[in-house]
Amino acid sequence: MEKVNLDEAFASFDERWSPRLAGELNGQAVKLAKVEGEFVWHRHDDADELFLVRSGELRIELRDEPDVVLTAGEFVVVPRGVEHRPVAEKEAEILLFEPVGTRNTGNVEDERTRTDVERIG
Image (tube, rainbow, N blue to C red; front, side):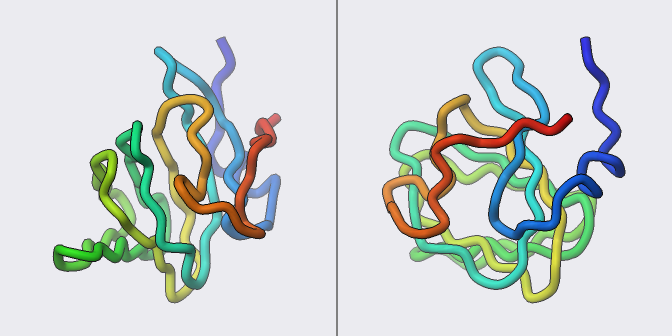
C-alpha cells in the first residue's frame, strides 16, 4: 500500500490538462490534474467520469443542460455518453475517477490527448 499526500503530489507537476495517475482500485483510475482555461468538448461512450475539485473552481459545460459549477470540496459525475467541456477561469486542482485506460479527451483526438498517463511518485 502506498499513501499519497495530495499537497506533495500536486506540487510535483505544473502542466495543465495533463492528468497524473495517483492510484488504481477495482479497475478505476484516480488521476490528479491542474487545469486552466477551456478543455475540448468530448464524451466518454463507455465510462462515467467523476470530477472532484480540490482547489479553485471548475465549470462543467453541458450541451443540453445547465452548466455545473464546482468549488473546492464538491464533485459531479458526468454519465457516459454525455458531451461535456471542463472550463477553469483560473487554475484549479482536480481529482478524476474513471475506468483505467479512459482517454482524457474521450471521443476526440487532438494535441491534448494523453495515451500514456504518467504516474505520481
